[in-house]
Amino acid sequence: MASVTTVVKRDGNEGKEEADYSIKPTDSAPTADSSDWPLLLKDWDKLLVRTGHFTPIPHGSNPLKRDLKSYISSGVINLDKPANPSSHEVVAWVKRILRVEKTGHSGTLDPKVTGCLIVCIDRATRLVKSQQGAGKEYVCVIRLHDSIPGGEPQFARALETLTGALFQRPPLISAVKRQLRIRTIYESKVIEFDNDRHLGVFWVSCEAGTYIRTLCVHMGLLLGVGAHMQELRRVRSGAMDETKDLVTLHDVMDAQWLMDNTRDETYLRTIIKPLESLLTGYKRIVIKDSTVNAICYGAKLMLPGILRFEKGIELNDEVVLITTKGEAIALGIAQMSYVEMTTCDHGVVAKVKRCIMERDLYPRRWGLGPVATEKKKLKADGKLDKFGRPNEKTPSQWSSEYKDFAEGTAEQTTVTEVAMADAPAATPSKPAPEAESSPAAAPESGRKDKKRKKHDGETAEERAERKRRKKEKKESKKVSKADEEDSD
Image (cartoon, rainbow, N blue to C red; front, side, top):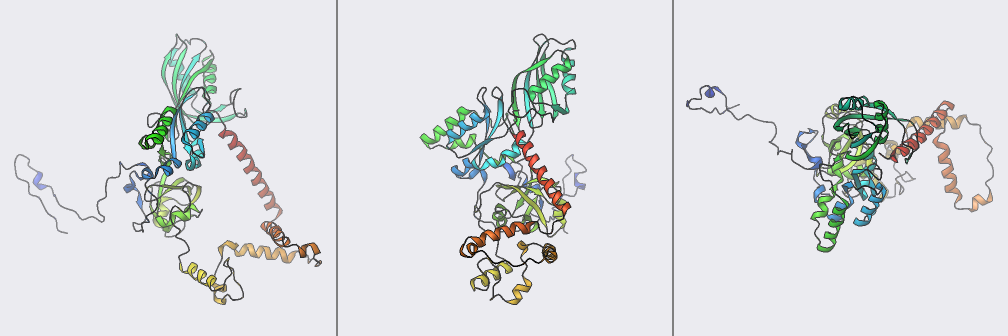
């Protein structure tokens, strides 16, 4: 390798001439600095590279450059909820002002509580569940029923004691069943304390579903004087806080008025943010444009569809799948770690948990392989029926070589055959005349057979285990539904 050495003149900087100033060869071209890129494309050049080769498709767009209709229907508002109206009322007002089909919010606030309320619009309502379970931060004003001898240090110690996993029962007036449950306080600190006026102000970071009102009552018990919550404000909800992009209901109304009367959409685009702003905390996997629509139809993400991925992804981590333009496609559960993604050449990378993008925004790019092409040709020639199933004209080579993975495994088939062989032969009965004459009888019997076959060959233990899992699933759904209706 040739190197170009720069000779430095002796002008009082002795020693610099010994340094080797040379142009070194590199394996890749220098990349642009992406530290100031918006939303999910920030620092994309620091992601691990699976492959750099893909064919761009001229569909989709950058989240910030969507047309106004798509921008609003895939948008979220970080709303400063006023005191007195309920969260549901506020969300209904936003829906009426913007004239949209659906709105949802990220965790209920009591009527008297103010602060961050994330309002999701239309397509973004699919992210409501993920935001409801995210952490929250509050600033609370607590009123003690008497002065405490230890002053502020005693108050700070009591607040520090109530950190970690705590037992809580919802207040007497609440929207949920008053069951004892465990909620975690991650961190807390005293902002101000006035012993003469019996008032204290503190900040707390906690798990979703924590009752700050109950926390204040517990502090009063711990201090021995009694206490209650005077005032509460939520300063952070999930990915959004009050320091950035917080807007009022008046802003929403003014922005819509400006759009209706002057056709100026700038104000509306300022108060509404793309749904991708809620997902900046997730680990990212960038996928090829040709893979996007298959994911929207529920396909698992396979290794050949990956372009880049984040370092630190582990098995069963929740990840966000994004396009090369920075659009969120879906939330997924990782099926392999980032180390396996680097070393393997095939396999399932992630399963879709919640699809966000609309179907057919990108064109279909499946069914273009050699087997699928041959199958289409056989269907066109009448050698397979319209569903791709063999008929009397099907070539024997196709029947022997083609494997339909939708029909189940060979083991399942064997179990079914053994169960049928073990069953006593039933005497063939004469079909009822109604069944012969009724055209609807055949599909009905087919549905019944399908239901019967689903659990054929099942042992008593397997049946008991299946019923137990079904019961557990039902109970967990009931508990999660109760948690969603919590008033923070």
